[in-house]
Length: 392
Ligand SMILES: [Zn+2]
Image 1 (tube, helix red, strand yellow):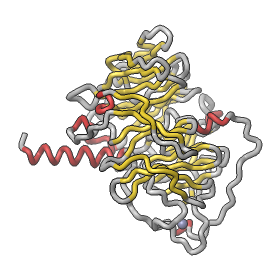
Image 2 (cartoon, rainbow, N blue to C red):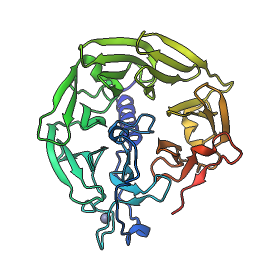
Image 3 (cartoon, rainbow, N blue to C red):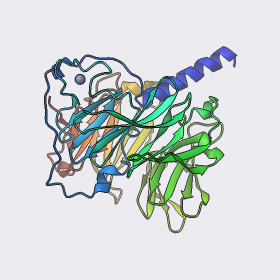
Image 4 (cartoon, protein in one colour):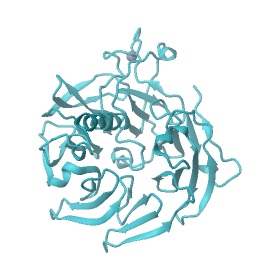
């Protein structure tokens, strides 16, 4: 392969990484929203424990872009925060400044952020200034009072990570970039407390950090998926015990979109099925074989009550955007209870589930834009089941 082609592929891969993490910034005018004024208050009827809101949300379609809070739902889209009172209601930019056109950096909704998190009545976000300074910032729930809390590091790489129960866990660099040859010599996983002046601390140091795909913190254990060398498709699964310092290779084939509880971990492997990892025994078992005649490209989302499998029936990955998608909803006995052709998605766009907001699952038919559909979970398995449109 010529050097030119290698460089072109490298740029294409980096560009796709940034697109997939929704980092590209395209200024827009959101004219219907110009006159918006709203008051945002905590829902006092809310019985859910604090951790429901502060823990990293497994099963979300991207990393740390969506918050379900006692105040409503927040989304980070192209570096602006959007607010929806119930998740299945209209999304508007989080700004009530008079005469703001909501498309410049002094708009209250603008964060410049790659990742957002919720903790104790504030929104936290990670952004970059002066080309190489990664900072932790916060704002009020109504979009006012943006403040820089601390500098995380000076680096030509941005940080990647998750907010989880008052901490931000992160690596320096973009997952997978190392695998395609962009050199970053920092092999640490860090965490930093969000609401004080303390400095970041190193949680784990190991060269697997260079090839990390995702990680998730469950109590004292961090589960990490790590790209196999020379491939960006298959992953190893590791666990790291923060108590004992033991780093263990658990499985040689695992998916980054896994789902973890205290006792079990689950993932879906394309053209194989659903695997289960037993935390206590260390055993990995194939729980449900799922194969299609024309397998195409499949992705699964695991939520506490159902498993959502989207089957793209086109085998050619370049045709992903052509949308020949079928949704299967499985219960946790792995029985199919709904089969839906997703033919309402606009051609040329990638649609996917955004997150679970309690009674509803939010869906975006264009992942680069505001969510536009939702499922009412109480309708699953009944003849009322449908994709409802989120109305403006
Ligand atoms: Zn504004």
